[in-house]
Amino acid sequence: MFHLMFGLPWLVVATRFLWPLPWPLAIKVLIALLLLVASQYHYISRLSSGSVFAPELPRPLIIAFNLAMAATILLAVFQIALDLTALVLALFKGRLPLVPPQVRYGLGMLAVVLSAYGVQQALRVPPLKDVEVAILGLPAAFDGYRLVQLTDLHISNLFPATWARAVVERTNALDADLIVMTGDLIDGDVAHRARDVAPIADLKARDGVYAIPGNHEYFFDYAAWMRQYEALKLTPLLNRHIVLRPGEAALVIAGVTDRSAGRFGATPPDLGAALAGAPAGAPVILLDHQPMDAARSAKKGIALQLSGHTHGGMVWGLDRIVARANNGFVSGFYRVGAMQLYVNNGTALWPGFALRLGPASELTRITLRPAR
Image (cartoon, rainbow, N blue to C red; front, side, top):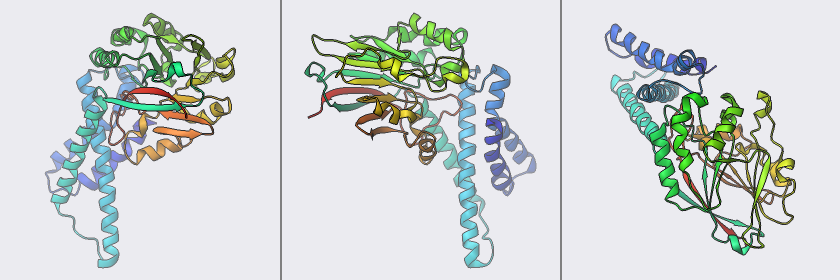
């Protein structure tokens, strides 16, 4: 599917951008062939690595593929806009205007610059984003309680051990009360990723580090990854909860499996089971990787749901499409009935499309306050 989908922008660039340029045919054919290879990045990943979700290629080559693929897509969009503009002008002039080569050169440079910037934004260790959440009924003992949400790290050859270690160091420096990880920790099986995920074991928070799976864990032997979670000193919340109790106060942290679990023969999300036995009246913070079932969570009396999965939409314009695929939820805060939903843009993103133009990655510190 991916190799066909990303082949279409290449076709636009080859026929509408490269072909009209006043260059020797050999040069145009060579560039077209190079861009064709770049457009087939996912197909090459599947052939070489067995999965489009975990390209086991050298990191510089993965970066180069993402740069070239992003530039091709952007250039195709610019070329389509140029052609539409020419058609509109033709309605007034009676003929199609001649497009000077300099216009295409400018569009090509813009596509390359934007793709380089977008890939750099995707690869960086994200900056801190501070968020305050007011929760009705939050006990005074939790006023100022700080939790850090990490999500969609997609640790892989693109986001390797050095990147993971930098994220861990920056997270630990925040001195959080609690760390929660809301899915898609990895891309790849345990054998390939063991070294890259090793820094995660060094995460520190006073009340512990809790995690749920995302859809990507199910692509790579879910059971093996849940065992690896525990080896990394993460406590999986798989349709269950824990209760934080400073004195007589109580705050519930619940987690569910991913909504894709059933397709892989694994236990599907069960919010009822996750909340079974929770103390009555205690506010509940729910960890659910995908935000689309937020209405269901709200009906169960959840105070705050933390999700990821969407990567914030990654690119202005594309975020509207991502929102439609996730029941309107794509980035930031939403009010769903009496519940608050926070959709995190992600600490990283899938190495198959590492581009951020607009929606920024984030290292998210959430400070809880009683609602007044």
